[in-house]
Length: 361
Ligand code: ZN
Ligand code: ZN
Image 1: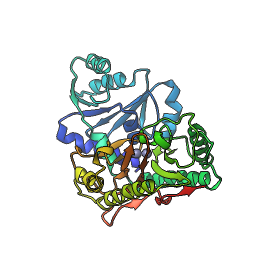
Image 2: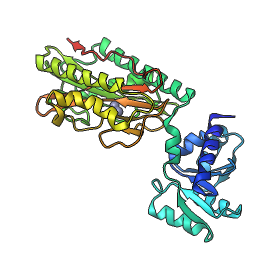
Image 3: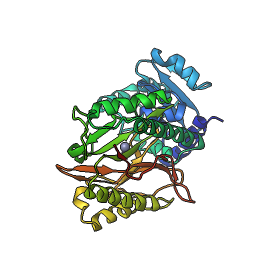
């Protein structure tokens, strides 16, 4: 039994409670999770009995046969529509669809595929299955994080973060190092934000040159065989001021408190609060405008969210980030982000490069 077949069986079991004859899965990451196929135009039909049919267009047929050997395969430019027809022809009457993924037009076309077919919401059933990672997924993310760590170490060891270099040059260097180390490309747009620009949590790297006394926020990650890594480190270009050390230490305490709160069963908003309380107690609550972290896997941002309004509980084997930050307009910002696996015996760090403040010459 492949991991993908095991996942389809779990989805089939979840269908029983929904009183649907089959699930039509169209989200790209969900299709990949259930079949192994990475495609921009594919869908998979999973029946209550665990049977499955994959549909995609001619560009992906050969890849589909390789990625999902043994799975029934249909060739169609409108894979979801074709699978809806297929479900109806097999006698299906109720089809659970990913209404959070489909456009209104796509939903209408599925409703037209066969007048006898009733469309019901599948909800985020597949996303929910994806939260707890299996050993193979964790191994890929551990490897992705390790090669991103190695890229950062190489960047810092060779003077890649120094006065006179632009944010763009540093970002390009870091991305090239991740690729050279075996990564499949950045898992999101690399952030390099120096000096006052570090106060913008999602700054795009620009032409600003690094200068003495800058804090530099580096937020980066890589894809590896479909899975993402995510890491942020804030370094200083000498000389470093006391307020910069204090800010870095404050974020570090919040980061440690967030990590200490990661355990199966923990309330998601309570994990956020564990870190946020440290920053609020220091009088910096208004300068921390985002949630503590997010799940990572086949998507860079996936369930579970860790934030003040997050509802639900952490599960064993969830992979999440912990990334508190404090941003002072006009002066700079600090964020420290690690990627961790939740386990009953305490979280395992996947990002292992030091989170201590490094001061570069
Ligand atoms: Zn990040
Ligand atoms: Zn992140």
